[in-house]
Image (tube, rainbow, N blue to C red; front, side, top):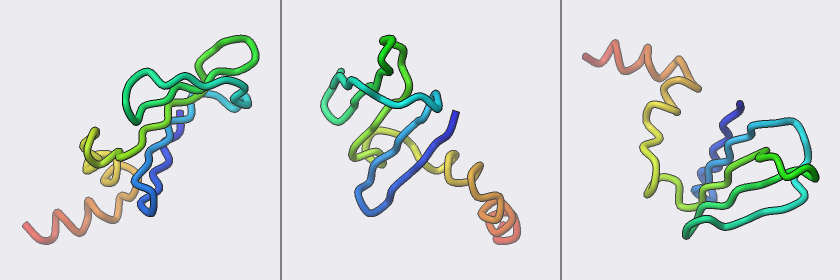
Length: 74
């Protein structure tokens, strides 16, 4: 599983597989599921991610340096 956040578009893509998406389905406003040719879920695309998901833990986990900086500021 790989998380990719794109701040310029405020979108978060959660990749669940290396397979290519061949079909997509919007399941809620700003949330799209991607499926491969066999109908298996390969990814989740979340637009306006910062309004839907708390990205702080993701950013902290993805960039350990942030944890060090936060720890030093306490």
